[in-house]
Amino acid sequence: MMISTFKALIPFLTLITACEALSSNAKHVCDELVRGLGPSTVVLPSDPRYANISTENWSQTTWKRPACIAVPSKALQVQQVVKTLVKKNVPFAIRSGGHSPNPLDASIDGTGVLISTGYLNVVTFDPVTKLASLGPGARWKEVYSVLDKHRVTVVGGRVLDVGVGGLLLGGGLSYLTDLYGMACDNIVSYQVVLANGDLVHATERSHRDLFWALKGGANNFGVVTEFKLKTYPIYLVWGSVRVFAATQTQAVLQAVQAYQSQPNKDLYANMVLNVVPTNYTVILTMVYLKPVEKPSAFRFFYHLTPLSEYSSIMPLSTLMSLFPAATLPRWTWWTLSFKPSGTLYTQMSNLLATSPEVKTIQHLTAGTMVGTVQPINQNVALAGRRANSVGGNVLGLEAVNQTWISLNAGWWDQKDDKKVHAAVFVLGRKIQRLVQPWAQIDYIFMNDANADQGVIGSYGRVNVLRLKLVKWAYDPLGAFSRLVKGGQKVPAL
Ligand SMILES: Cc1cc2nc3c(=O)[nH]c(=O)nc-3n(C[C@H](O)[C@H](O)[C@H](O)COP(=O)(O)OP(=O)(O)OC[C@H]3O[C@@H](n4cnc5c(N)ncnc54)[C@H](O)[C@@H]3O)c2cc1C
Ligand SMILES: *[C@@H]1O[C@H](CO)[C@@H](O)[C@H](O)[C@H]1NC(C)=O
Ligand SMILES: *[C@@H]1O[C@H](CO)[C@@H](O)[C@H](O)[C@H]1NC(C)=O
Ligand SMILES: *[C@@H]1O[C@H](CO)[C@@H](O)[C@H](O)[C@H]1NC(C)=O
Ligand SMILES: *[C@@H]1O[C@H](CO)[C@@H](O)[C@H](O)[C@H]1NC(C)=O
Image (cartoon, rainbow, N blue to C red; front, side, top):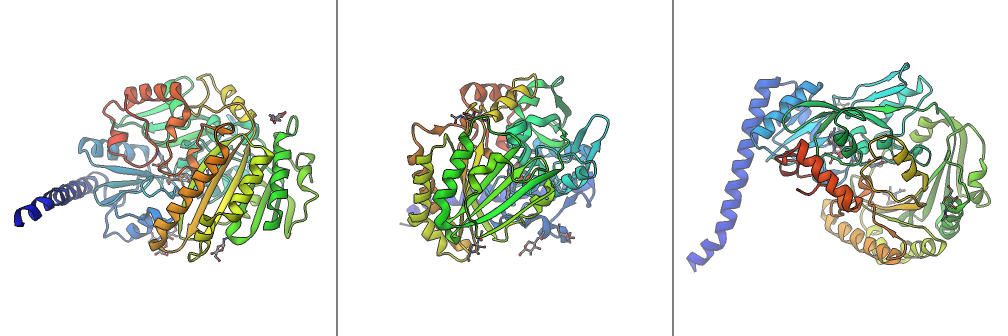
């Protein structure tokens, strides 16, 4: 009896010892980092800044207690940190704006070190080259406030609080996407710290394979310390936000279908629809990238009567400021891509209105479910391929009109985590069943994907093989797979 109990405990004892060994290894490396970089660049748990950074306020589902947090403000410091962590085999996480709600994407516990790029947040615009240079730790708010002074913009985030780094490395969906492709298609240079500590510039001319791989390749290849993006002279736009009653969901979705399938859709027109069944509303956001009132591309929506409406010609960033950061403390999300049809939209609207999973979430404290409908024009894939000479991006987008739907659930209590995750999972399965097989599109949009969705695999066999080869060339020992556990991973060759 004694012996068998003891035996049963052995795996746990070894596990505990292994964890302790890992934690103490991480602590030693933190001390080494403090000695090398100074206490202002390495935040220990005793530092007053520690709580602030480890509880970065977007989703509490990501709050962890790393052994220490490196807060580099120069690429050289990132090189030192990465070199040390890789040499000592210490796990780490990389964070820019911290807006992924997936628990490990940009967070790590006491067995590892968090690299937070929050101080690598410089944003500049060069009026001669017309390029913008963005630090990964900047928020879109800071980006647009610099660019607005020059009346230009970039293909970037639609919500001001979100970080630059994660959004750009996941592809990036923007109000300019129908027109100019994904955000990553508009990046002309990446400054990257590789696993061996080298700092390289990946462009169309140098490190072309890495340049390609970073266009959707997430944190698999290095820590990006600076992005250079094309800019466009877009400043004043027509924006309209309309809130409809839930009873109008069907009608609004049929208008979305008509909008998406109109011949030669005006690429300056962009929209996103948030269906919020838990709160009995539907929120339509229309953006026209020129200062033109009521453009005809949106004519399908004008006959619908909203509960409330705000429409105006305004700077694009002002429109974005109408969407404040969500106040709910816990979030998760899930996404799917499909070829839209009137029938599918009807079925989805019925599903959201009647499914018990939505009710489950609705009954939790502050429980909210948002189904976000994002129309993507066939031009997005074409613009990506046209954008550069290295063969576009890694995403494997099909040149067809499509919709990227995401389910976003917000709630209050940690004790409800399991219930919400289960509900979102089941609801996702139900949507997938409606869509399959005739309308499904393989591509899964990383920036809206749950950690348990296989994003990299969705890029297609050839792209995955190419990514593995680039990985082999730039991270042969697989440091960014072995040590950086969070995020979507390129499989080993
Ligand atoms: C309110 C809200 C609105 C959103 N709107 C949009 C939108 O309009 N368009 C869109 O495309 N997405 C949008 N998203 C999704 C968003 O792009 C992702 O959440 C993205 O991960 C956020 O980037 P971040 O830097 O804040 O995230 P983080 O959580 O800091 O990082 C996300 C991932 O990227 C990796 N990473 C971050 N920085 C680096 C770096 N410098 N080097 C290497 N790897 C790095 C991290 O390791 C992590 O795996 C939105 C999210 C929220 C919460
Ligand atoms: C914590 O973060 C907030 C928001 O970024 C900042 O205003 C505040 O100064 C920080 N506090 C400390 C102690 O660093
Ligand atoms: C985030 O929220 C927590 C708890 O509400 C608070 O203690 C912390 O200071 C906040 N951090 C920031 C950066 O605002
Ligand atoms: C896709 O959108 C374009 C407009 O950009 C339109 O011309 C085309 O007919 C649409 N295709 C389908 C199948 O709806
Ligand atoms: C929906 O309702 C919940 C519960 O009342 C609330 O906490 C949440 O903020 C609402 N969400 C939206 C998007 O209005």
